[in-house]
Image 1 (cartoon, rainbow, N blue to C red):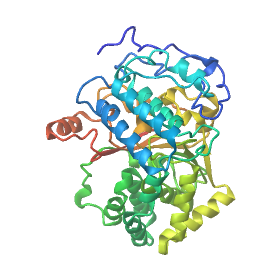
Image 2 (cartoon, one colour):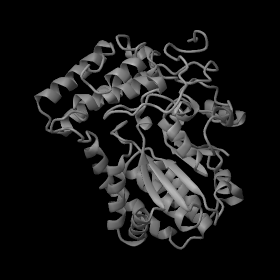
Image 3 (cartoon, rainbow, N blue to C red):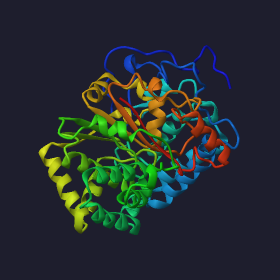
Image 4 (cartoon, helix red, strand yellow):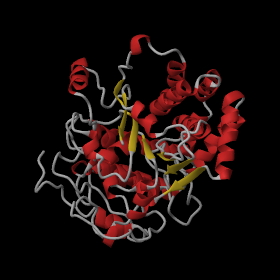
Length: 429
């Protein structure tokens, strides 16, 4: 599919000062109140849509989203009003017509501007990133998250997050920390970076990297790109570094992130860490402040090294060396190139920003059909400071691969882009 004038509809450039203050439920107000810029430097690749039958984006909108509506409806004793709103959203998806927000919603004006090219049309014709974001805004509205009633502020995904956090797999992963407690700092750091990278395969990450180095310096074939050496070079021991970590998922995936933060602080790789989380429930499992607290408590309650890690992190929070922050932009339907000036200034002050997860990666490089060998450094040159992406591949977008690596992956016949079986660590100093 080609792009008209190198842009998709609604990609008019919006530039100016700081964004307007956003009311409750407003992800991010574009400067001047205009339409969003999906990617200011667009034109080099088509925006990812969901209009191709059998594609990954199509499956998300046509199958995953309706299934999620049913799961959320069954997870809470919602009343008639919530059930009717959820059923209406389910029917809207089946009819394939994007509906508007209620005019009474405080963020109606902003979403009307952002979606003026898409509301009333097909869900599959809208940019995939926008459609996913708008779906979650509509889902939260249906259950009354942004309202004034009894369900205001109740996370509809909380049961799923908490069930995972209390599961036996987390118990096993926390015990694995004991084996790393006496390991040399460099080996421990490599193990914890690997665990943070793989998220819900953290147990495997702890064990693989906790052992002796592979014979002959063998490379993990599941890593399609590995700039971990560059990452560590940016954070030398003893330097007064500030590290920004933009979290992805809660629960089982957030615990390895927190353990890595503890290592950075405890071994002099960072003097201060700022952990950024979402301001509202997002993409089912994305972390909010409440989820960080749940993970810290889970760590602190555990025996052995996990408990000691939890205590250190709790103390770091109280002392200011670990800080939690959020920003409305993290629930916005835009790439990071469109971040507002206040957030840009915050990240510019960091020695290194670590972006976790698949969605952050798509927002970082642009949710477009880039060639897989396009330069990661070129696409992230706009970012205000050094940036690292730690990502398990769960969507089509990927850049920065060597041609030989790409050829081997394509010849394997595996669904390596979307299955979560491969990962990458990419750094732009």
